[in-house]
Image (cartoon, rainbow, N blue to C red):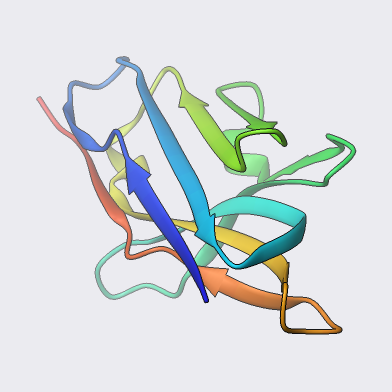
Length: 121
């Protein structure tokens, strides 16, 4: 199957920066869209940013101008550069990828375990 492993979370002060990374591995034939979602305590999971295989990007309004998503198709990785972080950005950030495995004819959605981002002074 497919595994998504995130890294780069942690504690940062308001106004600071963090970079999240996610690597996909396993029985991968091709990867379509990749992205990041987040879930804060007591709240629903929400989209942060997505990027297609051709590098078209989409951002939630609340992160536009502060976050930048990128991917490396050769390495099956997606990254999220987060600048000017705010306390309301505190959440578990989950990596997402739409993957066609070597055994499948169609794409399926896969998720990472999540990495905690805490913005606090």
